[in-house]
Image (tube, rainbow, N blue to C red):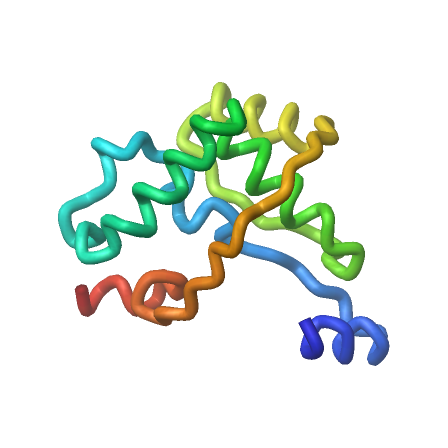
Amino acid sequence: SKYINYLHKSNIEIHARSIFLQGLLLAPRANIPKKFERWASVWDVWHKWLLDNNLNAIDVCSNFVFSNKYISKIIVGIDDDKSLLQIINSFKKKINFKIPNFKFSNNNLINPFTWINL
């Protein structure tokens, strides 16, 4: 967050991309590709938290990014027009939730550029 704050103070516009982690955060638990199973505990916590709080992953991800006042734009990918409408509608929603401590810094998971080596 100190970097985002510094960039913002330097009048640099901040764009967020891969807010759905290339779709992994939206995929049902059973559909997570095998190469990501080494992080099974992460997926289990994520899906349990969504279920326990009756939350939709698209809404949580978009609201989380929009909660950062320094992010100016969001770049998303879509599969079809239905996906686009779901994302647009999620951007319009304001939901309240408290995210548990999901801090996870393993670059091999959070940086899609590294996935080719998995």
